[in-house]
Length: 106
Image 1 (spheres, one colour):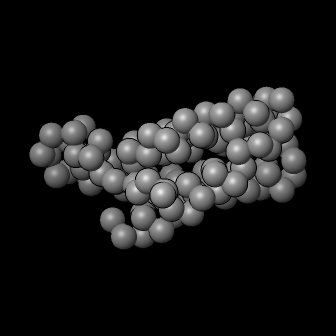
Image 2 (cartoon, helix red, strand yellow):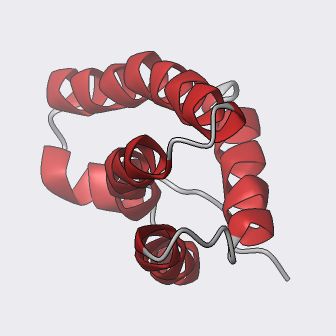
């Protein structure tokens, strides 16, 4: 079963401060779609170095949203990209979809 994104880590960082919590959430909602778009662009162009950089950036959002297993899989995918392999692509894709749906609700 796919793990679900959550705000536990963000809540820990904010320590009850609603404005910090909002800034963190807004940052994710603002940056993630742009990073995802860049990822798909470099994927389409088969620019492995850029794909790797995109995955690296997105990985931080995966971590912040409490997706421990997905973070590990993204790490493997990033490593595979260095070898010009897209092994791990499907798992990363599922994570992107889960995050996209989730950030629409927060």
